[in-house]
Amino acid sequence: MAFTLQIGEKAPGFNLPGTDGNSYDLNDFKDSKVLVIFFTCNHCPFVIGSDEETRKTVEKFKPQGVEFVAINSNSKITYPDDSFEHMIKRMNENIFPWLYLYDESQEVALAYGALRTPHFYVFDEGRRLIYTGRGVDSPREASKITALDLDRALEEHLAGKEISVPLTNPIGCNVKWEGRDNHWMPADACDLV
Image (cartoon, rainbow, N blue to C red; front, side):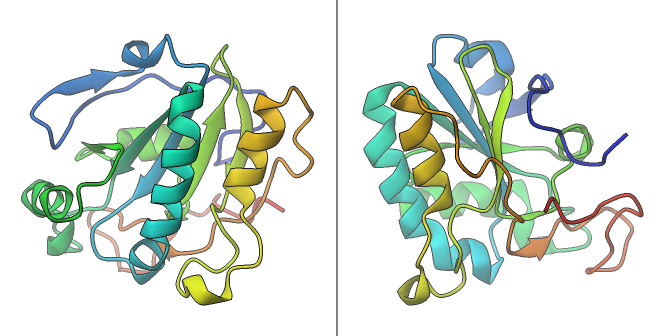
């Protein structure tokens, strides 16, 4: 079995606390036409460098029935800046237009096969995976972006078209796994394309 969720597979369930003081599970988003789940964190330069591009994508597609849920699965022991307290602070400072959930056990990251931060997963109305990978082709340096992969996938899907490129490799820092070196990746984790 592949480490990362495959195109056509159903979204794994979860129940996670959010920075807004509420807890959320997959069923809370059942009325959304499309659900975008992305693994992110507080410190990664690839996340920080692309936050404003992600914001533009959210603001463009949220009115069209697309829900965006960010999940931080990084170990606060491996990387203290990724603690829940720092997540709350980051959301208060940046007022991002998405939910930000904490996967302290890292079980959700494993269920989805999250490779990097950021790593995006797009699910259709039936919650089947239709796109996974990067948001943009230059997340660390927004001025060098030439491909808006997440934007394109959402545009195509909402227009009733087949997604032309359903798989891209996420670009970013690896997920910080509990009790592991900062750069450790699970043995079965590999490039998507």
